[in-house]
Figure 1 (cartoon, helix red, strand yellow):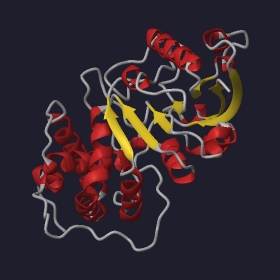
Figure 2 (cartoon, one colour; figure 1 turned 135 degrees about the vertical axis):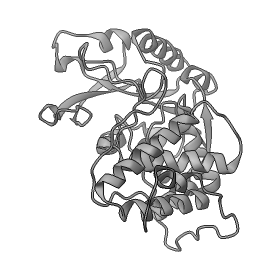
Figure 3 (tube, rainbow, N blue to C red; figure 1 turned 180 degrees about the vertical axis):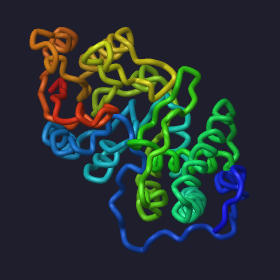
Length: 328
């Protein structure tokens, strides 16, 4: 397939949708896994999260599961497919992320069609033309970031662009600049899996059971009671002044936000909600740092070993300890 101009390179993400020929879902059930890679994803820590989950969840006695910092959603997909919970509530303050979840839930067939076209074109290109396609798509995605529309075609276009960028950008990151524009560089991969139709369909089925909200974490935390299990994975408290990687949304999650979250958690603890909080372990850098012991008194703090993957210098990636903080 010959691609001649940058306009043509991005046209797949702006095509008119063929609503008459939707994607046919697979007959065999597929276990859903995250369709986006996100900074701080918890896939590798799921066995530890499972081991530390409340007994009431494992016994099927929890009425509500709430996850206010959704990101890639690995914990949500894990919980939703393994435990009986009456009500699933997921939220984030990242508009494009929440639009993507809602669009995959409501219109997965059109998302798959758009991504299949992206993949067919991208795989057939030279490395140079792939780079042009990537940056042209990134520009198109950023050009409409301030627009808000309920139109299905608009939401599908943005969702397909977001997934394409996520699968083809450097290190699979989502990062924005101060203006809110996606700014990750092009990644050079042979055949990135841009369109995983079976997994997207599986995700859609799981998401059909969930309430999906675009909101601040404080707003959604006020809506739950004592029969809830709440998993909180906020942007981590930085280990050093140069380690602050919180720009997955235009709003930075600073020390004031960490304390605001803690205040909500202490109030939920009084209501007897079951809380699990992930965060960085300050003792990686300073063994005497008792920030989380002081911030969450009487909570149980478990230290886990995880892989650091977001540093741009490969020699600075590797094992690092993280915390699981629970009130049970």
